[in-house]
Amino acid sequence: MVEQISTRVVYANAWMTVHEDEIVLPDGTPGIYGYVERSDFVLVIPEENDGFHLVEEYRYPIRRRSWSFPQGSAKAPTREAEARIELAEETGLRAENLRFLGRLDNSHGLSTQSMHAFVATGLTAGETAREVTEQDMRQKWVSRADFEQMILCGDVTDASSVAAYGLLRLRG
Image 1 (cartoon, rainbow, N blue to C red):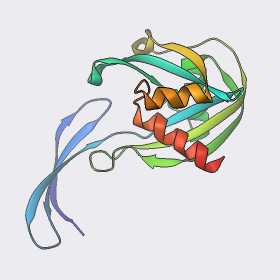
Image 2: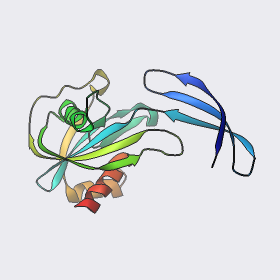
Image 3: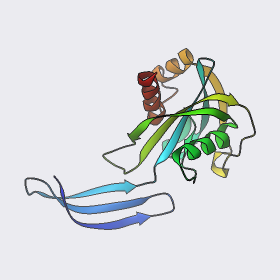
């Protein structure tokens, strides 16, 4: 096991903290390990009529627009409540049923963040309540076959959305 000798915060803001730790590897070799501490988030697969509602927005780190399932980290007492908030904020949809699919580590070699994936069914439309950073967000419904094609042709590259879809397929 890796032993932590010391830790220091090298950068912090409201969304993340970057740590740099002095470590010693199991064979005694010293080293440094940097990682990002981030809050967990929820992802919701809004499923309807053998298809899904997707959102698309400009993602600054990759400098392009990206299609994905609704996701984020709303402040709520439970993950289910957080998922309901994110779904409604981004799509305007309300779910009669919300089923937990699983928790996945977002980038376990770089970050502490995990994703909590849900599937939402029994959807009814309503008004969105998007955050200011989501003002350019668009949404659309796509069939399951079209969604899979979007993954294969590179239109959906969000790893969290693809991983959550994998959980959905495995759990049925």
